[in-house]
Each structure stands twice: as structure tokens, then as C-alpha cells.
Amino acid sequence: MLPKLNQTESTCHGIYIKFSDRNPIELVKEALVNAVLDAEPRLNRAKTESAPLSKLLIAAPQVLKKPVVLFFDQFEQFFVHQRQKGDRQPFIDALTAWYEAKPPAPLKILVGIRADLLHELY
Image 1 (cartoon, rainbow, N blue to C red):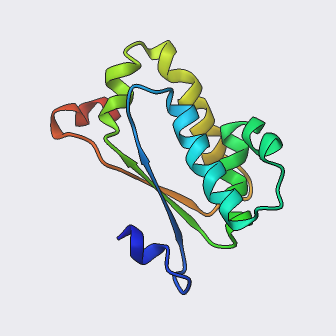
Image 2: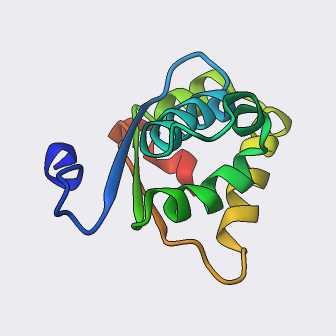
């Protein structure tokens, strides 16, 4: 699905993010920064990298000039490595800021997660 989304004639741009033991905010920011700078190399890398995740989530569709679909693969790693609610909160807050943005940013998130940890999404 991802190669199809990233064809020039596609109406969306797909970005793949494989979760691991790394900080989830940094993982998502890195993928967004790379996609944005690939599309618009004239942007300042340092300034783009220093932007908060919530701002990058909102800005990415604008820079890419099409809606964005984020593929969160192995999302169970988020729960495995951020065991405490307090550890998860910064990432949840960033996603909440994106979700509540007015007007809404044209960005969707598809989550891939193991069935035995699906209950964590609730």
C-alpha cells in the first residue's frame, strides 16, 4: 500500500514509522522531517527538526501538498517501552494537539499492533 500511496499521481502521501525502544516522539518527528525535507529541500533542517511534533503533524500535509497517512508499525512497542502513563503522556499530548487543531490537518494514522496488546489502545 505504501508504494502506491507515494506515486506522484496518488492523492495521499504515506510515511512508514516502525516503533522500537526509541522515543516515539523522536521516531515520528524524524520520519516527518525526512518526508518534508525531501519534498521541500529549501526548508531549514535545524528549524524543521526543532519544531514540536504537533506542529510537524499539522505542517506535513501543507508542505507535501496532499493528505498524509502515517503507518505506525509495531505500535505495541510504544506500550512495551513506555510502561507508565506518565511516560506515554508527551506523545499522547502531541497527538491530541494535532487531532484538535482547527482547521483539522488532513492526516490519518494507521496503527499496526499485535493482537495480545490491542487492549492497550483502549
